[in-house]
Image 1: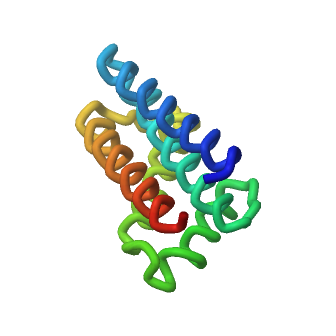
Image 2: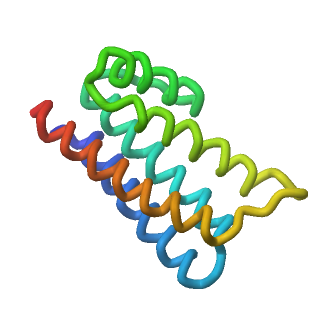
Length: 127
């Protein structure tokens, strides 16, 4: 695993740990945002391992779908998880009328853990 991939995975693990702390302190919207970023960084790690360099969130999402979900290299449910997490993050960060509540954030925390675990397994298989 190259240094860039390792750094992205470290960021993913850190973001997930911060999300857990935020949940414990009752900050579900902020936790939801961090959960998305954990998934985003893990996806960036996977793409970097393949030499795919994209920056925009939509491009990361698209490349993940194109290179991994669509050809069946990863279960497409993980692509859907990433897309859904981004929508929830956008609500949490930008929407002043809708609030992310604890049960939604808790579910996403579990999904974030699963997502990162699966990405790490896939990265191990790529080595």
